Image 1 (cartoon, rainbow, N blue to C red):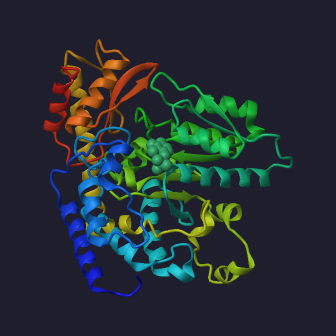
Image 2: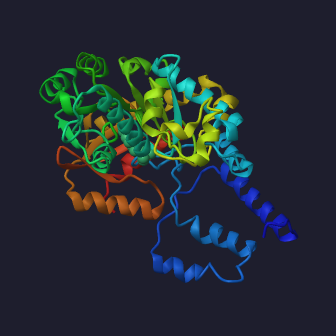
Image 3: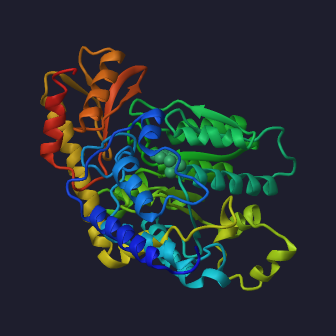
Length: 451
Ligand SMILES: *Cc1c(COP(=O)(O)O)cnc(C)c1O
């Protein structure tokens, strides 16, 4: 199977043909989940001693498996945080796979790491981080948050004379589930601070907590674009409180940090330039394929101290240590997963990114206006970024669920319920510039009827 063959020629044609057709597909269908039993009935056992062959394996993927997986770039996929990778980024993902590059060390992946670092530098400049800032692309926001939290704890442990019995992370009640989950992984506590009336974590609230618990706080985790509401915490106030108490400030911009890229939305992030660490997921609102989170540190040396692995079989890498991406997160082997993002940025230029962000921001404002004008809907929070949260008046939890399943099954929208202040709600998250005002009108109209 490592020798090239006629059959592999055919497989190559069918794989590359699929990729070409899929990246050009417009419109992209949603797809629909099926049960394990249904899939088994259509696929049977695919892993056999002799192999089923490339034609059959590709047929199963094209006809059965792919349609049973949702397309996150479907234009009416507005739940969770969707994705809208550019054609250039997706095509380049094939190149990354084909290149067999080890992205963990400079000596092995210098060219790839150089390019990834230029893309990281663009993000660092948008955030206003200093020249020495740097980091690495990790799989997602969860891993980015964990890696930053570990670096913060390591740095706090070195500053303090005595290590506290339990470390704590200060964050808001609206921060992403991964913050609490990763604190559990670290056997640390979360101090969840109440937000103000616009659902922001404020500097005053953080200052109060640091006054009381400062000695055991490893970091404050602020959010620049909460996942449920798209709210940006008071980064100016929080950074002041962190500096006063000499506490690490991490900014989780996994979703919202993308809006740094547009001059129109950049001012919303003032204060982020003080962050000790920062993440943004290009696989969310920066048009890269899964999986890709940009993790940046103000002082990469502190992160290296916390993360670098040491062993006899690795010392050779250290001697070439221009920039070993493995040293900056919870990982060793890594795919050069920042390259598809780098390629698309290089191809299209940064202005195209600003424009695409503006288009999705306009969609969220349009949606908010249409929701306000619709008798059957109620806007719950004025959108700050591209998330719009609203209620379907008169519906109970069951009706919310029924409608969502109905439209998913008919392939006309993917909009699932969330909750706000304990009540069921719907939530649109716009990251796809190909979504249109007509898409929004159609979904709003479809919400007149439950089934
Ligand atoms: C999505 C999200 C995460 C988690 O990112 P993954 O890439 O899914 O691991 C973390 N924080 C925020 C604010 C997010 O929106």
